Image (cartoon, one colour):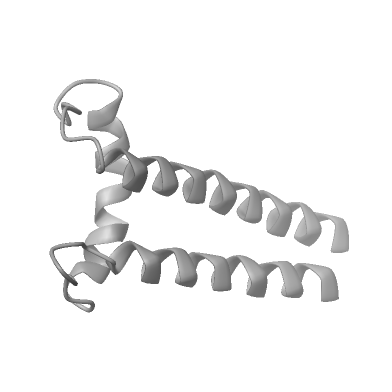
Amino acid sequence: MSNSFTLLFSSFIGFLQIYLILLLIRVSLTWFPNVNWYGQPFYSLSRITDPYLKMFRGIVPPLIGIDISPILGFILLQCIMQIVSNIGLSS
């Protein structure tokens, strides 16, 4: 039973790490104005990451025209990863 929980937690942490990388790529690409978000692979990337990022856009207002809400998203995702990791290690 313990091995299945360990596998479940490690798989979930792996998924969150991949999602964190996708978020980092998405946020980094916003600095390039020539990116066509309607072409592949950028369209798929935005479809995967935008729902999560949109949750934080209304919480943190832009500062000097820069949207800093993804920072809150990164922090929350890191906290979730840490909590899941600690739960997985304790079981």
